[in-house]
Image 1 (cartoon, helix red, strand yellow):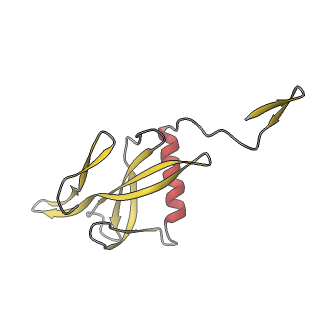
Image 2 (cartoon, rainbow, N blue to C red):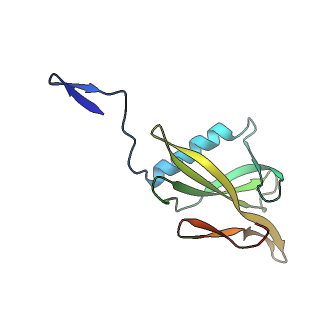
Image 3 (cartoon, one colour):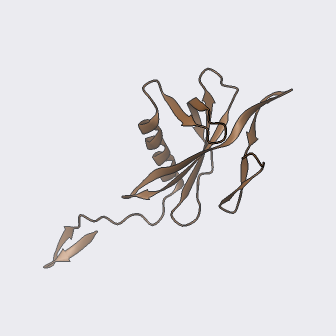
Length: 141
């Protein structure tokens, strides 16, 4: 923030937070999050909140589109696979919000889990979205 003091511009220590973040900002924040959370072998660790299983996953991609949800909440959907099992894909959702001007992940959830069918592995959804709210598809979720 620029303040005028005696006709001279001075930059305030309190920078304004952006009022909106764009797709590239969300994707960049996801890369920062992954850089901070992947272990030294590049493994993402997550405890499945439904099964309690400790997952060890390899990052594949961030889906398009990423988006702004309600207010200052942003959202990214991603794909990961268990180490060495590229056909078994987990769809993991991340919610982000601005903290000190930087988008920060505050919630992570398994959206779709790998299930096997006669035709191979597919991503089985646990929930869907109605507007910006989660609607669970099954009683056990």
